[in-house]
Image (cartoon, rainbow, N blue to C red; front, side):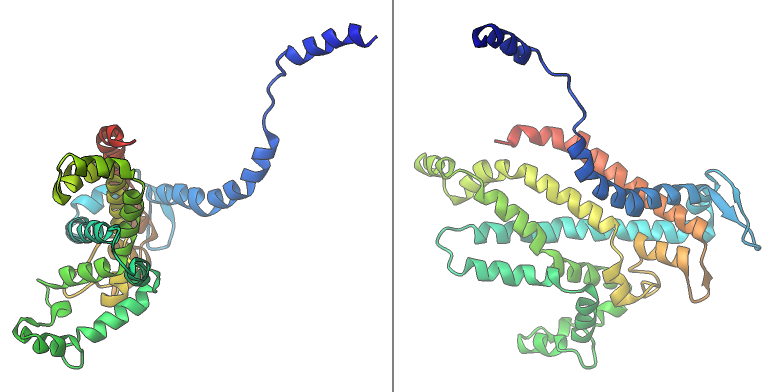
Length: 320
């Protein structure tokens, strides 16, 4: 009996079972998907929808298509501030790309030295400002750079550089640079840790082989380490781009919604805040604010697509 039924059982097992939808995966993903849809996807779609409407004095909204974007880009009452905020945002991003990521790369290289003592302490101290509130950071730096009672003038005098101090946060020519460097100081720990992790993943055999072949420290870095961490540098760059074009809190904490002096530190985030909610004599406009938010989304999408299709593919050959 057993011998007769065994082949039939084996034949039944050999027949591929009809694939079924993995319900357990859907059950586990449903809560996260519902929360993400409620708090991210729906507000995004509704913001785009709202940007296609305009309201009158009575509050009644009517569909106007792309008229809000045309007004934002061409009307002098809107375009001057928009293009000023966009230009300042580009400068803000460029400073972070060059200074923050450059310093982060250098610090990661130093912390990856095998003979460095106390590396964990240095990493913690450098990364610590990242975990602090931007309100605290803004308040502390305002006190430090204050020309009347701040400690910055005294510290510069102690090292013989007192003549270089000025009201950097109060001058149009230096306010944006100063705020950008404060942001660099706070967030330099993020690229440092990402690059540091990438450097640790490089096999020691490659470095030893390059050293045996006669390569010096600079040659090992330039021809071995740097090409292998290029994908990580690309990720750091696109994260910097997205974060800087979404920036708002630090500038608001230091310079307020007007982003003074004379809008010299105004970026797209603060411009959106004044447009949507209104500030002082400026009346808020939800429809124009939605248009500014949609324009920010388009700018970020363009930057991300350029990275994905123009940069990431070229960096794939450096992965190992």
